[in-house]
Image (tube, rainbow, N blue to C red; front, top):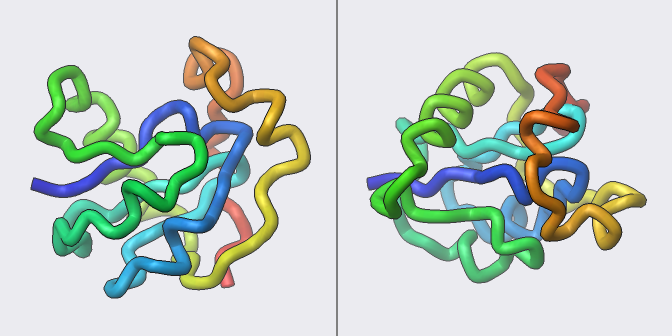
Length: 112
């Protein structure tokens, strides 16, 4: 098992999860984060820290797509190990449906 970041992170990008991760397995895209599944130790401390409820265990049904997305982009995006401010539009986009199809960006973030 591993944890994955799902579509509600898109255009929110809260980084509370990054601050508590003991193994620094978060990677930063332009408008979301992903977890590297081979680095995640399944401790679960990140899940309750996410204000957008965007982190889920990959054992939940229907998350195969998100496991693939997290795996792919964790190898392309820079590592993020420190908390940053959320995106300015975070509150407005929290809970919006269909964010992956409408807003996902494959561009990397800045990392640290």
